[in-house]
Length: 117
Image (cartoon, rainbow, N blue to C red):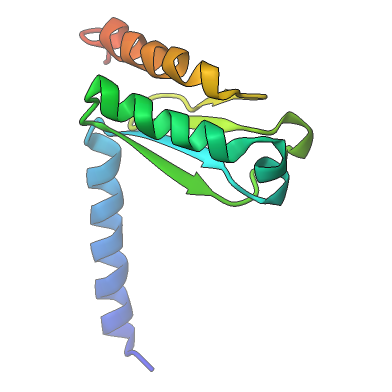
C-alpha cells in the first residue's frame, strides 16, 4: 500500500503529463476497436489511417485504438483529438475515407493557426 504522500506525488506527475499532452499540439486519431467496431470494418480503417499518417509524414499525429465508444450502430467510429480544440467524430468510416480525414485535420490545423486565443 502506498502512503498518502506517494499517492499525491503520483497524482501531480500525472496531472503534469496530461497538461503537457493537452498543450503539445499533438493530434490523436482514435479508432473504436470493440467487437462491434471490428465487425463493422474498423480494422481496415485503422490500418488505412496508420498508412495515411505515415505517408503524409504527420509527425504530430498518432493513431490509437480504443474499446467501446458506445455508438455501435455508427461503427466504425474515428475520433480526432487535438489539445485545446473540440473533438471531431467521424462515423461509418471506410478505409477510403482515411486520406480525407487526414487531409481535413491538416487543413483544420492550418486554418486555425493564428486564430487561437
